[in-house]
Structure formats: C-alpha cells, structure tokens
Length: 237
Image 1 (cartoon, helix red, strand yellow):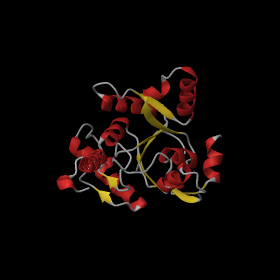
Image 2 (cartoon, helix red, strand yellow; image 1 turned 60 degrees about the vertical axis):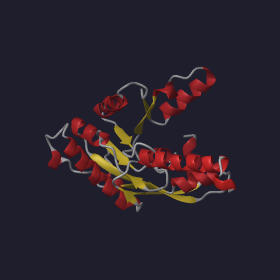
Image 3 (tube, rainbow, N blue to C red; image 1 turned 120 degrees about the vertical axis):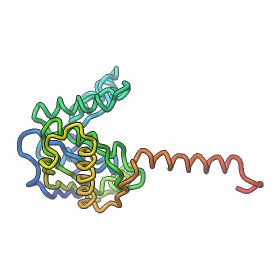
Image 4 (cartoon, rainbow, N blue to C red; image 1 turned 90 degrees about the vertical axis):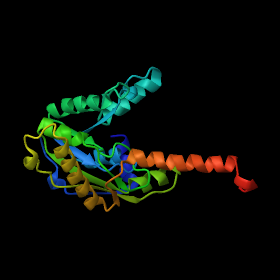
C-alpha cells in the first residue's frame, strides 16, 4: 500500500507468464538476483503474497528503528532465519519447509548472493533439495531492469525504466521422484531451472562459478589495485 504506488509511478512494469503462477497451494519460486530491487518488484507484480527468507537480525532490533524494521520486513513478506549458527543452510531449509507446509509461496535466489557484474552464476542446490522434500513445484522467475532502476532512483534521477517480471513454466520433478537427498539429482534440477532463468532474462550464464566466489575474485583485484597505489613499483603510479 505504501511502497507499491511509488514503484509503479517511477517505473514501467511488465509481467509475463502469469498463467504459470499458481492461484492456490504451496510453490517454490527460484529467480535471478540482479539487485536489491528484485524482491520488491516480485512482491508488487505477483497476484499472491510471496515470502522470502531474511536474516533474523531484521526482526530483533530494539527501539523505534527495531520496531520499524520488524514492521517493514514482516509486511513485505520476509521470514526470519538465523544465519549465524553453524548450520545456516539447514536453518534455511527448515524455515522454507515451514513456509511451504503452510501452503504459501516461497521465493529463493539460488545464486545465494546478488550478481557482482550482471551475469547469472551457478545455482546452489538448496532450493532443489527443499522442493523434493516438500513435494512442491519449482517455478523459475526472471527479473530484468531492477539494477538500472535502483541506480537511477539512488541518484535521485527521474526513472521510467522498464522492469519485467517473467514467470516460467513449472518444472516437472517427476523424473527425479524418490531421489530426495541425492546430490546428483539436486544438481540436475538446479542446472535445469538455472538454464530456464537464463532463457528468460538473456543474461550471460557462468555455469561453473558461484557468484560469491566471483565477488571474492573482484575484491582481491581491488585490494591489489589499492596496494599498488599505496606502494608504487619503481616510483610509478
């Protein structure tokens, strides 16, 4: 009610494939993670409430800021998980099962982090494991335009960027039935829905590298550059 009108007024939104979105029952959406705006537009443009997994810190703050944080993240469909324990991945799976068991729609980003350079990176197998365990359909979702939108808005520039949310056909998990816990099956499912996401978004697909690893490489290059400036070779800068 509060953020939706602003997003609509400052962008041109388009949704395709709405016939693939379930009108009832639990479902797992898997999408590309291009920018911080992805989840806001996904919530805005889909006809049912969509739940995301968020770190529990957003729900445990104190004072006015803590109250506003809890209100915002609960109101925008976030479900708290503890990412600080030794088995954060299992905590995420348990939280996901809780959401899906309640018949809700859960959205996860298989890349595990925002893309560091706009490309689509290798997906992690957690969503596939969760879908097999919960027995729910996997629906690929592609989002485009959110990165440009966020850049313009953050610089207080007028933005009428087209933001597209594309809903793909549900992935039939029948070929992998009964293979819950099979890592090979989880990888096959993950690779398949990542290819479907890429087909919708048109992003370059780096199928053999995780986004988090690429971020570390970029950071290493930046550190090396800073060190070179601080300690020039042969007096050169």
